[in-house]
Image (cartoon, rainbow, N blue to C red; front, side):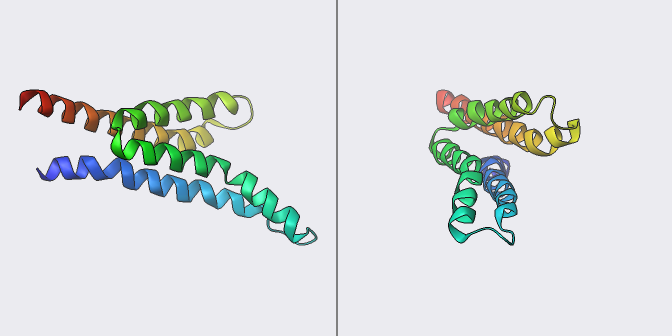
Length: 119
C-alpha cells in the first residue's frame, strides 16, 4: 500500500517541481533598460512551457496514460528542438526529468489497470 502511494504522488510532485524549475528561466527577462510592458510580455511568453507542463499535469492527474505519453513526448520534443544548440547535459537536465515523470505515470497507470482487472 505504501509503495502505491509513493508511486501515485511521485510523478505529480516531480511534475510540479519541474514546472517551477522551468519557470525560473522566465525570470531572465527582467533587466534594466526595458519597459515594464515589454518585460511582462516577455515573461508571459517565457512561461508558455510552464503552462504546457501544468496543462499536461492537470490532465495526467486523472488520466495517467496522458501523463505517460505527453511527458515522454515533451522530453523527446525538447531534444529534437535543441539538437544542435546545446550540450547533452542540457538534455539530461530538461528531458531527463520529463522522461522520468512520464515513466512513473506509465508504471502507475499500468499497475492501476492491472489491479482493476484483478478485482
